Image (cartoon, rainbow, N blue to C red; front, side, top):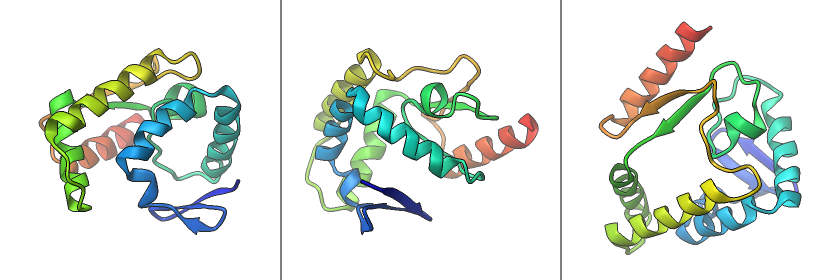
Length: 154
């Protein structure tokens, strides 16, 4: 399979899968798939190929530790479980999904546990990453903080 990104859209063998990859079902499957070393090997290779063109801001649960361990600027973006769940709930409801904050919190906790305890590429903060707790920040504030940090980091 070939993965490509154009702007904010993601393509799998030429098909736009941008909306499909953000569903709750796929979020749960992502943790299971990410634990398979054979799949991770292929995905990491493709992510590195995309990143090799430069000029990217990349997020993911093993980006700074596995995919791009030599990145020039690493930020470990975090937020409280409640803040993350509220943001995800807003995103899901905007797409027409009917769910509750409690269900989102439970799904999130399950995925976090799976991702932090998996044997292959577990979720963890890279030693050289700067941690940013965005719990009480707006999206605009987070972007401004990251841009300023990157500028001062260079």
